[in-house]
Length: 158
Length: 158
DNA sequence: GTTGAAACCTCGAACTC
DNA sequence: GAGTTCGAGGTTTCAAC
Image (cartoon, each protein chain N blue to C red):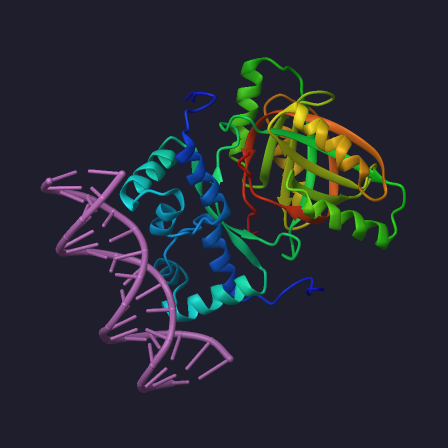
């Protein structure tokens, strides 16, 4: 399924997103006050944003720095080919790996930068050699280990 | 303020966190059903997790890949000194910059890896030269631009 | 950890512009 | 199409157990 790259969002939709990013558990009534509408149209808009996939869901943000047993490793990946097909096949596989917290297509020295989260170095190695290195088209991998998460924020709305 | 590195979380607390990460807007009654308690003790536990800072907040997760006008740039940073004081001073400043989506203390070639999100290349350059480069102790910066966000997940609980 | 009751929120029906 | 008000029914919250 192909989605349009950008969506028409008016000022109110933007305000809704901003507010929900700031407080994902705000009540619809308060959200309505915040954006200056009554609850019914706000709820309609929120549902539309959810259904269009603009809002993917709601989560609690945990303090990663404090949670034990989560190791972040950044892995830069180079594919053997960079044609559209190769990228799509790789991305499909990446999306299925729960260890991959984020994946960005990059300019420059390598093709992708991932953040992989595992409970331990051992688990990371198993994932790296058993799954990541075997993904379609992967030619080269480089891992950089994070000692500590200082800050992990949610997507802002700028 | 120094916090203990790890916290004692029993099975129920873990289940609460897992459930809230999956659905940050779940009603307390449903959450109670999920963890097998009634609402009052669940709410007490949630409040305790919030107050201890384990739960930092709640947010809507947006589809970064679809949102127009958000450029992700990874910046690796080396400080001129690496003593505890220098790190703390740098981290204090980083936490105040809303453009910084994540910051990790790293092993290896550089000290920190940041993901900076701005609406445009121009805004990024203003941030880089105007704020980042002037932060305490910053000796060297290297930027890598993301072409596209393939996947951005929330923190898992492993 | 449980119960219960008041306060609050949700969301659809009926209506207006 | 996009907004408002109203209210029955469900949810949250807190004191008492």
